[in-house]
Amino acid sequence: MPQISTSIPEMSILSQLNPAPIWIYFEEICSIPRLSKNEGKIKQYLLEFANKNNLESKEDEVGNILIIKPPTRGMENRKTVVLQSHMDMVGEKNADYPHNWSTDPIIPVVKDGWVTATGTTLGADDGIGIASQLAILSDKNLNAGKIECLFTVDEESGMTGAINLRADFFSGRTLLNLDSEDEGILFIGCAGGMDTVGTMSYQVVQAPKGSNALDISVTGLHGGHSGDEIHKGYGNAVKIINRLLWNISNQFKISVADFNGGNLRNAIPREAFSIIVLDQTLIVQVKSWISDFYSTQIDEFGDIEKDLKITARETDVPPFIMDEESQKKFLNALTCCPHGVIAWSQEMDDLVETSTNLASAKFSDNHTIRIITTQRSSVESAKENAGAMVESCLRLAGAEVVHSDGYPGWKPNLTSEILRITRKSYVDLFGKEPSIRAIHAGLECGLVYEKIKGIDMISFGPTIRGAHTPEEMIEIKTAQMFWDLLIDVVQNMPLK
Ligand SMILES: [Zn+2]
Image (cartoon, helix red, strand yellow):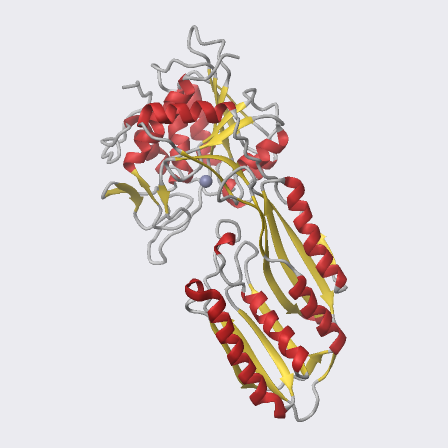
């Protein structure tokens, strides 16, 4: 077993687990508070670790840390490998569990083959990445070329560590990202993202005297993550309620008085609400039309959206309604605005290449409507084009449109050298093929890929479930597999 240059904490419960080097460090890290933007203590710990182990270390302007392990004698001609994790974590706890995130340690517990925490997130995302780097840095038996361990700050709340990383902070041009959560999967790409936001102003008129109003709601949809789940065919509440309004406004004289759909920009909208004003004589027909529309939607979605509800109930008549022309523009803009998968990857099965999420549309103050959308793609130019499609729809309706800078994607390269090496190690060690995938969501790798053209990267890790929740847990046996793979890849780096 490698020598570990740290004392084993008393009452250690994880040090009995395999592989010991990782678990001993992981348990130590559990006692160090390290929420995003509060990484001072973990930074100090990492720099002290480097000192104790006589390893060169440095910190950049934003707090990212690099610790360098020189090559073993005879291995100087191997390519340098960069191992990367993020030092911050998400702090979530059960409401009734007392925990001070600035001072209290996380209490790990072992349960049925998994490690979890008492009452809080465990921080295996990405504490297990940090622990594996420390285990490698302090391993005296390793036979490897130069290793650079990169610890970034603030991955979980803005990726400012990766955004501000300088290309010359480290020298290696092969990088293993240790921040993914599915043993058996090698990740070789991720999506970039951007927001496209439209703001349109509208005219109002007084609601006609003697009219009635209906409060329409679309609820009970699945929702889900706008990246990982965009291909699953879940209903978009904004799209559904708009389809309803667009159709009834073509058949009956109705006026929209309020519209409020969707919530978070990275979530598929689960609920949407609207108030319409109409003549009393139309109430029965419009309600019956809505009830037929509900049946159509249930047919279209089948089992995917079993809990979908569409209701219309009479309500107080609001004083103002949208004028006819503004209403036409608004409903046409949302009908035209794309939502969902735009393109599938040519190179990889089951990978969404480009998508857009119509995240929310809401009336706000001063007679304006805000429409928020997000685009994702592993191909930068395709992401920009998806943003342009949305922009065009909104501009046709007279909206002002702005795009956020967003973050870049990492385009999969199936002929990558590090993929070939890692896959061979995996097959040699475990006698089976790993699956090779990209994810339709953001990773720090996208930012690194943008800064350092041609850098060869891969991401893998042990199995973690419930990340970012108090149920977070890591499967013990996959930590051993992760460690075996990591060591094998690091020791088998090719000649320069
Ligand atoms: Zn992470």
